[in-house]
Amino acid sequence: MGDYSVKMKKSLSAFVLIIIVWFFVFSFFVCQAAVPVRVKDIASILGARENQIMGFGLVVGLRNTGDSQSTGFTKQAMTNLLAKMGMAPQMDFKSRNVAAVMVTTNLPAFVKSGQKLDVTVSSLGDASSLAGGTLLFTPLEGPDGNVYAVAQGNVSVDQDVVVPNLSPVRRNHATTGRIPHGALVEKEVPVSIMDKGGIFVVLNEPDFTTADRTSKAIESAGYAARPLDAATVRVTVLGTEDALSAIAEIENLMVIPDAVAKVVINERTGTIVMGENVRISEAAVSYGGINVTVGPISLYSEGYTDQYSASRDTMRVQTNANIRPSEKGLTVVASSASLSTLVRALNAVRARPQELIAILQAMKKVGALKAELEII
View: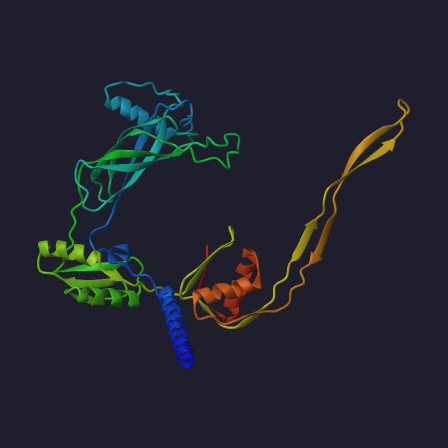
């Protein structure tokens, strides 16, 4: 009976051990697998695009922060505006309550007449601030010269109210503002998403692997799809009604996008971002630096005697500073087969972000970093 219990315990232990091993193996592969995303998050339909429109306008109601007399086009614009309204303005217009601006916005696809858009207002002259101003009626034109929207309203400018005494370098731009829902759409842009019995799915980031995976995902949904290049997949549909339902279904299909291995570095902020496909070969890394240590502050007094008093004490401040080279030798960075292994290997070097940037650049030069290195 005792031997039977021992055997049962050993079998149960082995079974539990197998379950634990399989759990960790499954978790490893699940964690390493890329996350599938919707087609609509990585692609768009050809023809359904935005259009940029802009216009020249005037912002009035400023508190002596508008354009100066040296800005001639502001004076000319005010003269033309008042003349159009039946007034004969004097040529010596000297008010600084007006600023010439450019009004810009994007006209989305399928937008209809009567809908409203946000607009951005930017100073064109030498105005110091657009705060408190009102944009007058401004037509917004497209590249073809047609007016697609008109803008008007109060300009909202971000003000630095947290620390108002900072230098102008740290303050927000007061010469650029926004008007929420400030543009009224007057004309819609015709959009055609059908071309010879098909629609075209265009990837935001061209990639042959992603295009092939997208094509196969669309075929699995019952549509005839064929990748044309690294960015375009053609889907065959019958009519416009079928195209709309097909687009709605295709947009929600799940695809695992692929991307080139890339490391993006921002040297100004010390930011490093790595993609999941980044790999490194084994390399030996040595980096040095200078450690600066500032000692504690000590106060002491010196006594002296002058001709008017018996003695006086003065307080003096003393600090201790030591500069010594960093004593670090070669560190072996092992080759990595996954991003987590690469991060652990680089963390083992115990380098600061700026030093790590220099290490990655040197590893790219020597050929140990198997990724594209982009510095922004």
